[in-house]
Image (cartoon, rainbow, N blue to C red):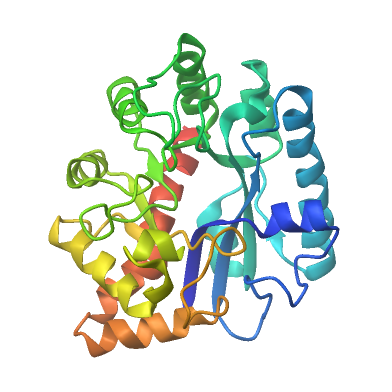
Length: 311
């Protein structure tokens, strides 16, 4: 089984709780024997209450920790300019460094290039509140700022993928209008299935599909089911079915949100991927489609940005 997961908060937990990436309390399990190959995107989350220099410093500290942990555990940390497909196919475990919340930039445009040099591959523009880029899910009506427009341009220039998870609707459409390259919603589900402000409307989903973007299925219970206490693995299937009904066959993947959300009652940790695969097979999904969702869509998307950096 090969797996690419676009989003987890395990790195943030390790940084703030002073634990290791392979600590058994984490939901992302480090088990080299379980998967043929796995690429995990490790996000450093910048809470909305953290800004300025402290936010910028969190990125630097998280990067230092991730480098150290990857060296210790034998994980291939994919650096700026390295080929992701090569790393994924040649290494049992590989990792990408990502940022959740553009407040990490500390209002400095030059930090985009600096963070790209640290290997940052993707950045969620906001968390739930408004920041210097635009409005999050709890700041509806706040579109992109002039600084945010400059950030988008710099991100595309330096190969950092624009991530619209957590963005309010207005910011989402501002991004769609102002970007030239595909963008991602690294950990977002379907609003038509679960009516949560963090989920994507059908029109947003269609926009990402048209732009050849990427959508990561989120396992947080409140995004899976209108009654979070009853959320279960079957809800992942419901969201998958809805995305596929809109034509997301080539842009759907996983963005679990492990170690950053509340899991359904029947999911304990990242071993759930085996159950999801079995569930898909039982519901008639072809092996080719399962491979696309599990890793091929994400790999093709990430490789597109690799190729642009090499051109």
